[in-house]
Length: 344
Ligand code: URA
Ligand code: URA
Image (cartoon, rainbow, N blue to C red; front, side):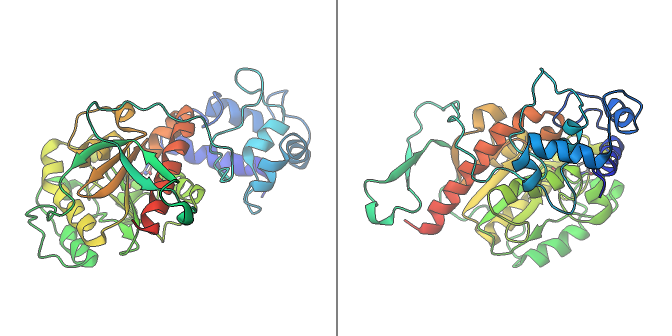
């Protein structure tokens, strides 16, 4: 597809979801739409010329792009659209393809709660040197003992994810069912090693009954791809199973009513790693008021399961500067997953 057309469609979608800024460039959507409509003098030549120029400037990003879609950022650059701060700054996590083999970024310096012991995990790929090659992950909060039943869950009788989904469908434990179109119980691999937990369904999720299918969801899919996981391999769900009207923040009463479903889902799946996307999921699962920046970069334990916290993909759409730290976080999740798969 013509990269300009691709970009136009993308921007229209973003505008529909209420965004006003381009993810990577501090240009307004209207400004960029004017540029690609040829109203600005910076737009020159054909889309093909733009793409060719982009290929010269950023051969790898253009090559890495999905061949069916082209790389709209390269096209923009090729069309001479000025980049913020002068030069072109490569994205930490370009939508087309994240740099899976990129050099390791500088280590995150996380807040470390005092007095919490460090925990050792074996390093992946060094079985023969087991004792010597031990990677230490900084351990964070510990919620629940590994060998306890998660809760006296009101849903202990629900023996499968499908049974949970069925129950959620007709749930009236909080008033959200009345304003939502349908429930969004979550989806994915019932035997997933990694579970992604978000906040609550948005408009797209409410309309489809599926988690993370809007713009944030597309970004989540790319984040997973960056650590070589597909949506089908993992399980994706939210703390709340019905959409709060107007995407308002969930109320404590709603969380209290709904979170047992999440707990039961985790109990049945028994993943090796949980990734909490956003403050809300993190604070709910870890039962803490600590900020996201305090919780990031650590490996928490949730009833014996490693839990890693990162930014919500919707927040990344608003603030692209958080893509790099998110990249670090999901790399950490990947390393913990690899270690856990390798066994003790
Ligand atoms: N945001 C979320 O937290 N969850 C979704 O499913 C979609 C958007
Ligand atoms: N709006 C939605 O409904 N879902 C998303 O994931 C993002 C925006």
